[in-house]
Image 1 (cartoon, one colour):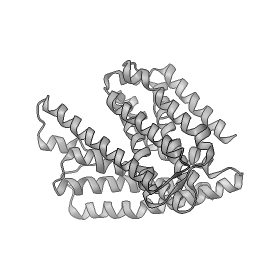
Image 2 (cartoon, helix red, strand yellow):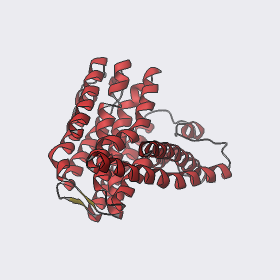
Image 3 (tube, helix red, strand yellow):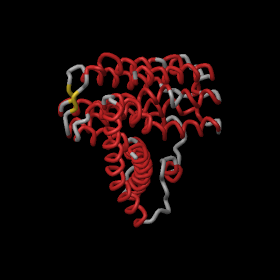
Image 4 (tube, one colour):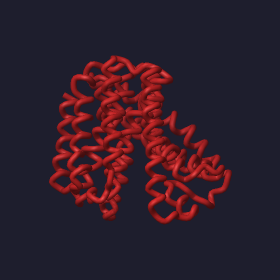
Length: 318
């Protein structure tokens, strides 16, 4: 029954997250917020809403292992699994993407996260530091995007809006309100189902909530990214996959734990500092050849990444 409820919670989270993104994007565009700002804030936060709600619920229910494990495990899965599995089917042509600046930002965010974790607890001030770093990175992204657009022909406003995920110029106000309500109601409900039943499974099988967070919960919340990248790869449109993974990982570290620790402190289990955080950093550094040397992620690399993820899960479970 617990497995069924976890699956139900995950489905509710994904549907509610999508509804929140659609409602928030169209509300923001209707009241005149620029599409660029909407993409970097509303869409990014909305797509990370399931992970945020899970970490927040876990912290409030005194399950810090799930709160941190969800983020650390998702970041590891994003690199090794979300890029690995699609690459086994077809080459990901990441050589055409210039992600050097955002990759350096992700590594700096990872090092900051590890440094704060070494203090033993993510406190209110830890959250403030993480959110401050997020604000700086968002400001830099806005600046770089404007700088880039000045060098190319300006796109019309309508075309700019269409680039935003979930934008629908024809959406009526009542639909926007319904999407927002579905998102705001569904997200905490789905997170509550996942956290409660994940704890029950952890106790039943004699494993810690840290292990459940790193594996079951993290894998569940990474499934949308995996499905999206897989479909893009099959359509030969996976050139932006690397940038999406880097952006998602930065938001996981800075926004999710930042917001959660501002609301409630999160105790860091020693296991994270001994093993898991370094696996997360190592997985991130594996991307160096594809970011700086302009190499594609071939099928061989896809097999290596996937095997590394399976190995990490097996080591974690044992």
